[in-house]
Length: 153
Image 1 (cartoon, one colour):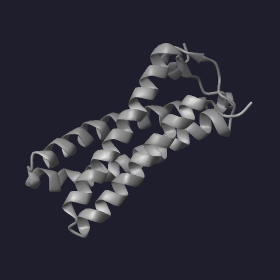
Image 2 (cartoon, one colour; image 1 turned 180 degrees about the vertical axis):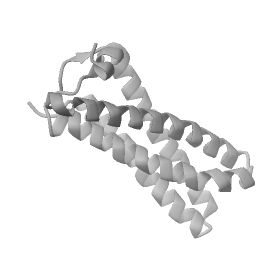
Image 3 (cartoon, one colour; image 1 turned 90 degrees about the vertical axis):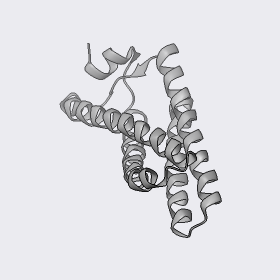
């Protein structure tokens, strides 16, 4: 059996959002403000699409438990919690960055935009690693409630 469809699609949207953030960063360095706005909005939309797919899958199907070796489960769980915290912080920073940019609060936007971008790059990288560990490197464990999948009970 191949990789599951919804996690593959949602992971692709996180990667797309990070690539768009990188492109947007390059555009603003070149002072292409309108192009920067459009690309960063597309990055935000990509992140929202990821979240909708992820949340829907979590609610209606559940989360997949780590199916790798038992001796790696603690490391995986620590890494997963790190990724979740980073993604939450990145999402909050992303919302603030988009709002400050759209409202032309450029002093704040210029301060947090680069920080947001760096956080989001790490979110994308750790998200891909979680995906690889769950579905590619190891066969995923049972699909169950979020609490049980993360904490194992």
